[in-house]
Image 1: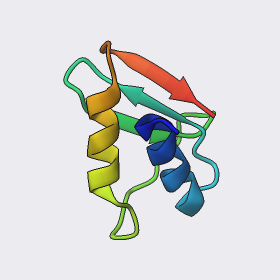
Image 2: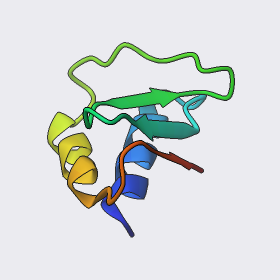
Image 3: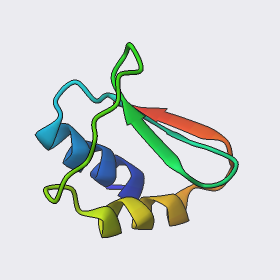
Length: 66
């Protein structure tokens, strides 16, 4: 499984409405639902996993969904 998908599924585990992630030119991420509603992450989210996913992105900006 790709790190991007793994990170997206990790976020979705705590925020089931999250179905997509966008990576901006500045390599920041935006995890959100279909209506672009975004969670505010707490300690439950493994930020290291999200950072590893960024390393796998080949082109910025990019979008992925599940």
